[in-house]
Image 1 (cartoon, rainbow, N blue to C red):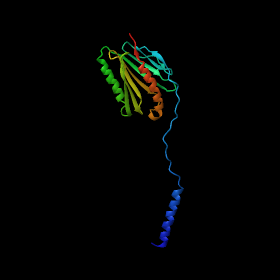
Image 2 (image 1 turned 45 degrees about the horizontal axis):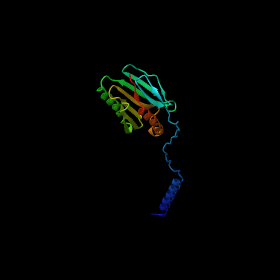
Image 3 (image 1 turned 90 degrees about the vertical axis):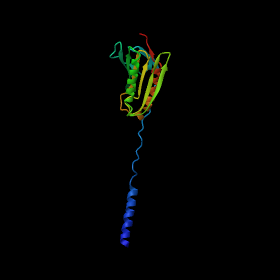
Image 4 (image 1 turned 120 degrees about the vertical axis):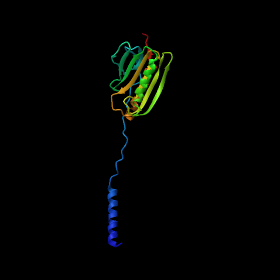
Length: 199
């Protein structure tokens, strides 16, 4: 190797070393962060709609007028207020025969299964209140799903209610987790104080 060729290689190598050392470091993306909201202390009041049941709901909630109600069916919407911008939707069904309850439970489970593709996990709590004759399941769907909580309640004889919590926003589970944890406390209070009313 002659000296001229060697000198050119050294100069090119040094030039590259100087050039690359002057470049800025590549940007390192940071994970998104979300402001932690402060929510009011949990407090409740009793609500009773047109359908034959009552429960405690949070003081920030408003019971909207019932719709499509008759002797056997009723839809009830609970508005969660401006702070949460969502609803708890209740669908009441009265059945003539206890055997029909199984079909309604299957339908409720199918509504949960509909979100399995997007859910990262589905947890559930069984509700068994022999004194008030309230039985059912609360489902918690984790992940970027349209509804993170669904449930059904029945007296196992003639009354059945299916419910779902829907927030009016893009489902981003990581950013909503703090809100969902807060709402779960109030939803659990509603379910634990649920009572059927006599006709």
